[in-house]
Length: 114
Image 1: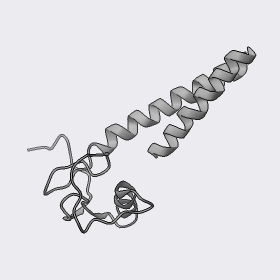
Image 2 (image 1 turned 180 degrees about the vertical axis):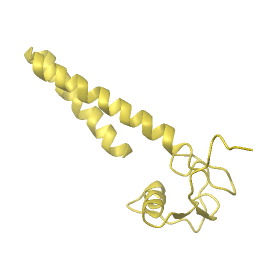
Image 3 (image 1 turned 135 degrees about the vertical axis):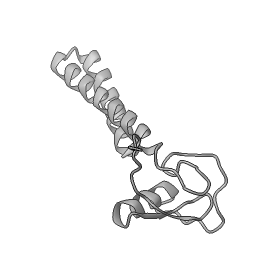
């Protein structure tokens, strides 16, 4: 999702520059809307992905981190986050790339009734 939004932002910025050079108002408006959409998608992804944390080490598993990876961590297409996202999407259980703990991904209630 993050790659998709970055691609939208890049292409929309290129179309925006082209529309300014060629003085095309319709292309300018549509590329500006696409640029805004890409920024909104990226912001939503950052907010949602910051909530997925490992239950043992409390690291955000879907955000890039400079923390040391476990020696047993495996990647998918060169990314540890792709593997975590795939595991969450298909099984609901993921292995933390930092500590190696298997964690069940369940949404937590922010406002619990006591």
